[in-house]
Image 1: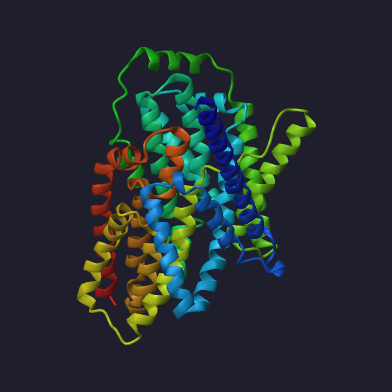
Image 2: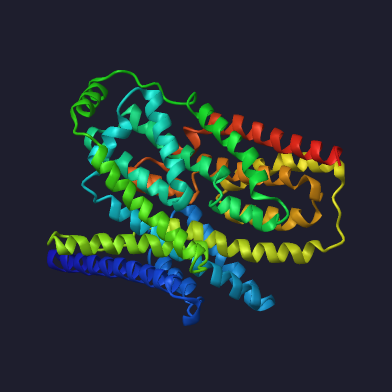
Length: 461
């Protein structure tokens, strides 16, 4: 009996290893299809590859991810029957976004093995609590400009490094808050963020400088408000020992220069590929991140150090949330335009009220597990054609502000899950409990700002 039990356990372990290999292999295949040029005619392969990788990791999916995946399957079957062309468009967009998601997760896993992280942790976590919080927040927001949610992976690695070494302290919990809120800042005002790109796609007459001129001050106010909603860092032996260690650590100048050069190389590569090679931005980021990881791996081989490409078997939840949401967004926007029709007109008096509700709608649907990619796509596709052209700024501010508050204050966003997976902090606790008061106040201010702009612009024209 004992031998039979051991044999059964060995078979289960072998099956688990094979599932891990399948998940990682198909994630890399999905990345490859997204990196290849359009002339290779593989744009549709990424979606089934990533579906296989996700299904192989069904046991590791959260409940919300399983529900989202089921919705993707149902919507895909419906589109295949009623509108096959929409299904093809959704699959193509999913391939491109999958390459971006896998590439930034791959980069984050590679950076986690960097020997400079311990020194970087000291430079970020030293000093007084307020200056430390602001440094982490603005650092995350700055990195998110070229890397989108990859900045959460980079900064979460730093937080996890300190937590692993010194334990769960108030300053590491405040650091996790800072990472989420810093990424929210980028979502609100970064010209390269997914939220801003989608908003301007559906509101083409709204100029980027108009949107940033209003969203940047709001994002700054959000970060300053966040410095109030922190956990008190009570002096303890752990905190005192940590501060002492930072004071005696070596200069962070060279590690920061190497780290900055690594990030700068990715940014420059992205800019060159998107500007001169005319490659779409998502693919340019994926190519740059992947190239940086491969270069680091080859450098280790030349130094005869142990190194391998990180496995991609533990990223199923992030892939479902980001890629599944993009897939649903394309289908839902097409269906919304079909059923709404071109004759519907929205009353002018209702526009400020709707603008006030836009951030709240994004947040509530995010709490229900729906990624803001889906909600933002729906809001833009449905409201833009019937919105007063002179008041598009009000709608745009409502979309980007609600998007940013959703990714920081709801536990089912991809960045919340990524932070949870890397640092070990529960996503519900980190995104919802720690940010609840800040989210409520910010949602009120965002709604009032969007409604006021809409009312003023419609009243003066």
